[in-house]
Image 1 (tube, rainbow, N blue to C red):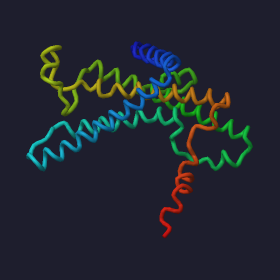
Image 2: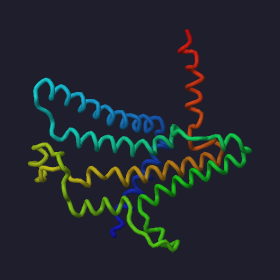
Image 3: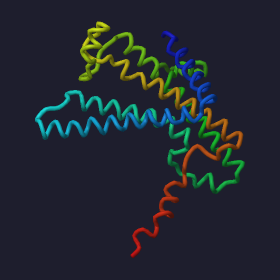
Image 4: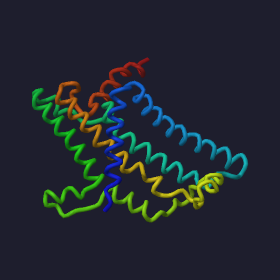
Length: 225
């Protein structure tokens, strides 16, 4: 298997790390704006389809596939963003019941497990060094799609793009699936960051366990007469 995707992902993570060190606020807004753009595009396409279908008896044939892809991008990008911001919900009853040193150890274990999970899904061939007979992962699957060059089911390039670059009408599937290796690399990177922050005492845990309880406390008087 070719290893150039691994190199590109490593360069991407290093550039991201450098930019976040130099422009932390700008990069934070950029990540949030990217998620907002994805959500907004889903809403815009869905709303446009309703108007087109019921108002003009027409519509965009690729709308369903576009929204499916956009939702997958949103979920995959949201994995790492949730770890970065501590928004993932979790059950922290054990962490709150044990001494702080043990809770810190459990939180470190959780961050390490999340990082390993991302690395295994990204490319599991490194497990062969541990004697595990397994191969595959997001990089291998994406590289296969890249080499085959097949297109998506309904998504099409604009005609001027087809003419300008001499492309086939259907959007290449590897473009749609490029989010798989990128998002898993981000998941591992954010988990590593969380591990370091927990070890240094900058954050307590990987999850946001008390969010539901806090919401209940904030709204417990809303339904009272």
